[in-house]
Image (tube, rainbow, N blue to C red; front, side):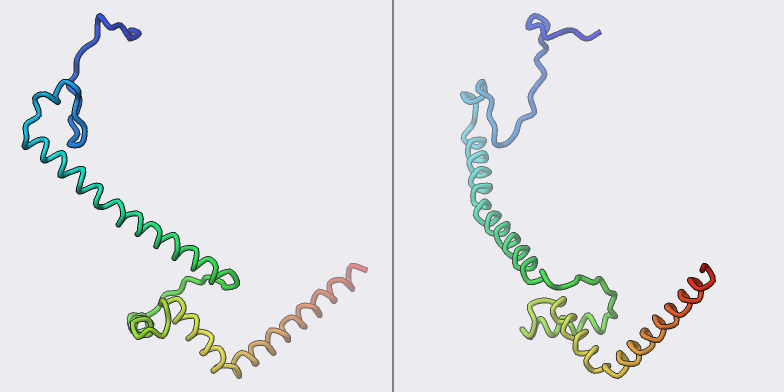
Length: 145
């Protein structure tokens, strides 16, 4: 059965020692080497703070930039061949596009323009399919009357 906290029965378990924390009873027994190690650790962590904050700021900025630029766009996940991936990367490395997604979007748009005759035929067939569906629905509606 567990007991409520009773100072008479308190057991002294050793606290885990963290490089950056010193217990009050240890400050007198701290060696110069331990003090130097602690100071070095604190300086090391403190020196990383500006870099970390800068990286976080860049990530937030990029995320906002992407969200603003993509407000009217659709995101589509596609698999591409290694060759296509290399070509997209070349366009980015050359500075033509900011990223592979922009390069891919451009190439898709250009491909659609180049294949305009195909898309005209597809649109004609879709119109014909819709006309046939409407005709079939009309036949069913006539039998119900």
